[in-house]
Amino acid sequence: MNALIVFVVAYLAVTITIGLLAARRVHSSKDYMVAGRSLPLYMNVATVFATWFGAETVLSVSATFARDGLSGIPGDPFGASVCLVLAALLFARLFYRMNLLTIGDFYKQRYGKSVEVVTSVAIVVSYLGWTSAQLTALGLVIYTLSGGALELNHAILIGAAVVLVYTIFGGMWSIAFTDLLQTIVIVIGLTLVAVLVGDLAGGASKVISQAAAEGKFQFFPSDAAGWWAMAGAFFAFAFGSIPQQDVFQRMTSAKDENTAVRGTLIGGLLYFVFAFVPIFIAYAAVVADSNLAALFGSDDAREIQRVLPDMVLGKMPLWAQVMFFGALLSAILSTASGALLAPTSLFTENVLRPLSPRMGDKQFLLTLRIVLVTFTACALLFALNSKSTMYEMVQNAYNVTLAGAFIPLLAGAYWRRATTQGALFSAVGGVGTWLIAQNVAADALVPANLIGLAASVILMVIGSLAPQLIAPKGHPIARAHTH
Image (cartoon, rainbow, N blue to C red; front, side):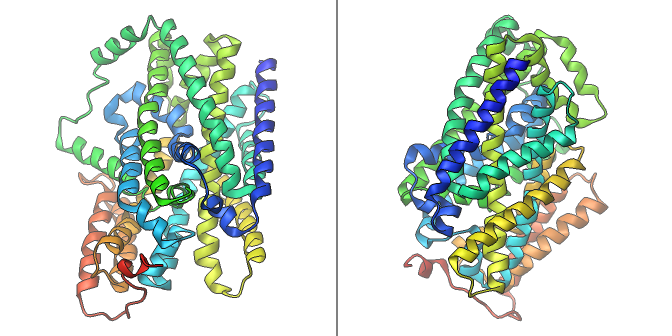
């Protein structure tokens, strides 16, 4: 264990060093937020892949599959991969040509300041759950490695401090360089661990045949309730995560629009394929040691996330422990850093900056860093007080943007008759309907997030076609293309 802890500390030190060296490239807010729009294809692919390949993929999605099979994970990796493919095909070229710093700038150009602020606040709020999931996971790893010497909450605080240190100085440049290192470690580390765990379980063919025999590959539900639940989880990721600043900033940090499209497509497809590696490892672990399945019966939903760490520490040689925890830390750090920068950029640019339009770039850069620290503190409070699994935290995060930001984005890009009034009705009414349905009819056949999405569609159409009591602002996207 001591050798493993030495490795982990050394790896975190290397990551921080790379992040701080990359910070020397930051000379403006554009450098900080989108890496000066200069990333080549290989770096763009790595940053897009790292958008989703985080704690919930390695620990939570994998363990949920081991317990519930494919029917338990429609949102991630299926919905998450569809999100990146749709973002590449429908929005990458458009966003790049509009020369935006944040996704909130799209709403401002298309609909005006009111919609910019409303949608930006909704997106920022959605990040609390997403960022908290990463900080919780980082704490869980540090806690596990300490052998209980640290309390979980103290471990979460330490993990947050590491991410904060290298993100606060270098922004997207630090994220891009550390993502590249972390993606290499993830791919090599998890592949080697998968081979080792597969051998422990009696070979890959035995693991796959046992999963098939237990119905783990049964994807489609057998009843209407199951279909609705699957649709709710799938749409939360596939559509709700498109209007997210971290997807936007990783996509538009590419050096040109063709790289943005290709990088996002390749990154999304690579994520879908490689997400099944930790899924295989988790199920092979249960096959190799049936006692691990006891974690599925815990009253605390977070316990199932211990399946892989417990198995690696209990059954694996030191080199495999090093590879696994290196890959796990890489996955968490790469996602957590983006999850901190994204809401910071959006809130500072689209909520604070309109209040102080004369703010210079140096002052804006300082404000970005202050907001980053503030948001990290808020996410920490959320993480320290939540008992949800990371998969549940992330899904809840995307319900906010599914109900309040996706339809104004889609209509703004592809429906010329969409208006400011329609977008406001859609954003406010969609989130309001989702919250009411969530609190009044949480057990209804149709999930609350889909009711919110339907309300968002209907209110966008009604608000745009009805007499315009709210004056239209902004301009159609066709004119924005010429910027």
